[in-house]
Amino acid sequence: MARNFSIKHPFFLSVITLFLLFGCASKRYMNKALELENAGLVTEAADLYLRSLQANDDNIDSKLGLKRTGQVVIDRKSDEFQSFYTSNQYKEAVFTFLDIDNFRSQASRYGINLGVPQSTFSRYNEAKEIYLDKQYNKGIDALNAENFTNAFSLLDEVLKIDPNFRDASQHWVTARYEPVYRDGINLLRSGKNRTAYYAFDEILRNQGTYRNASSLRNEAREKALMKIGILPFNGLDLSKREIAQELRTYLTSDISRQNSPFFEIVESPILSQTDITEAIIRGVLTKNQDKILELPSDIDAILSGKINEYASLTTPLQKTRRKAWLRETATITREDGTKEKVTEYHKVYYYEYLRTSVFKMSISYSLRSMKNNSVILSDVIHKNLEDQVLFAEFDGNYENLIPGTWYSATRDSDNDKIYDDRNSVNELHSLFENRQRITSSRELRERGLAEMSGQIAHHLISYNPER
Image (cartoon, rainbow, N blue to C red; front, side):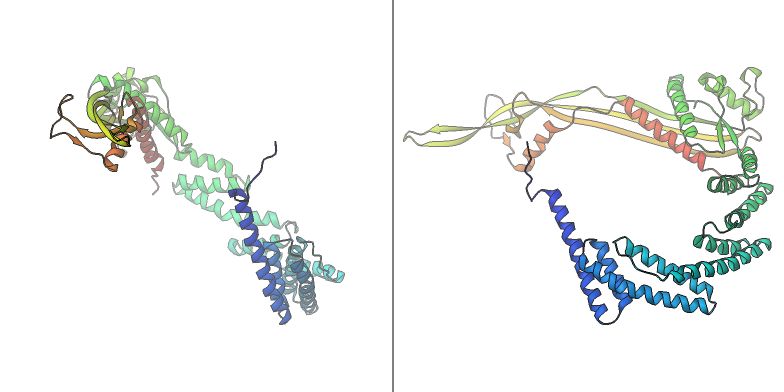
């Protein structure tokens, strides 16, 4: 069955609006171009005819205008080219021809073919060869003099005009990356292994291969690499063993996920045993480790910490009976037969429910060198997450409930109160529309551990001994 769309449909309104905007812009540019053309400003007029077609490529008048003025522009530029060529100004000739070629390409997008004398093409190739040969040789001379910045500028210009000019692209690579390569070597010699790694990595990512940059990058990484053992964070009592192991799992995952070339997690069964964490740390500090507790020999640093505070719980659902009024509208018939609507309020109860989930944790951590027991980095993190639900239920239509209070279900009292104003009613009704599902303490715990682990991982990955 065919669907009938109204012209008021948002999609069609948007299309029509855009069409009108572009149409108006195209016409405005065309009218201005016509004024300039009549005033003899042909180059400026041709530019506006192009802009008119960019706004609306179906503007026939703009196409005709571009055909007229564009050919004049090309003819004038061709004369300029010939003048430069005959006076041996090859640079100016080359760039004038490139202007011609660019303008013709723009016009051809709209089906406008602008003619250029055939002799211009052959003379351009001659001028280009002479000019690029000069720039190429200057670039090679600069390269031989190890003036890499100047060499790069000259060879880059050559390749922008002719990407296949002789072997310019090979020399361009040398001009571009030899300074970076040499910087990398100097950095490696001075112990700036991380910075050296990034220098060689830049070359390899952008160029693929260059001299022995790959092996030097590997050397820089090996020298900068820190192999880390992660211990479960110990707590004040054995009840924190599970959370300690969970945090260690998060940390191992987060640090590995960073894909840092300078950190590597070393796994070993002894590192995951929460009951000997204190003994391992004590052994590291005193350099008096028991053979049973001996750590893998290739570990450079130990990441450990302490759980200072931890709480994770969801309270039982608290149910409270509340008083309110049920508003009912009835139609009564008076003695004279007339009918009248009256509002009556009845005393009722509804139930309010409250529940809270909490995750609270405080940890202190440090990364210690296995070589000299120095603290490489340390910090304290506090995390406090909480969720609460407060909602209500009523055995009936809650939309007729009115907030208030009363003292007796069977007797009226002067102290009975009905709050039948909009704000009070909306506040009460919102309780019945509130969500009832609470974020569990387990969910808060997972989120909290993930956030704390992420902070530690970021702190670790951001560490740079070369700064």
